[in-house]
Image (cartoon, rainbow, N blue to C red):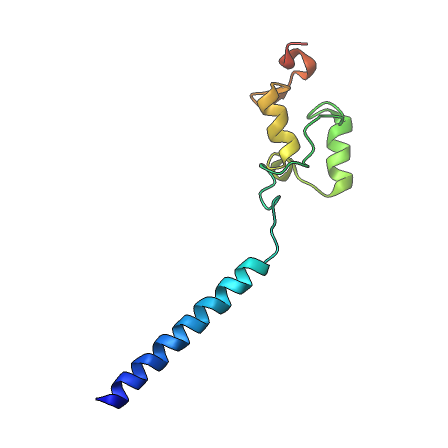
Length: 99
């Protein structure tokens, strides 16, 4: 019976040590505040690119090796849609911002 009790105490001690180790690692873990680009405080929010889907814009995409589908996932595109600069996939420019 005493050996069973020692074994249980040993297991509890191991679990406690593992828990403390994990807590220490968590405390020292780096914080990645901007891990979600849509919530980050640094993403590009203004549109200083050529008008969306214009010939110049499409050349820009091609030169950067980015497809239109990939571009639509970027924060700059999402923010332009939210601000009304792009409506229903079409460029409306500043008219969409009410300025």
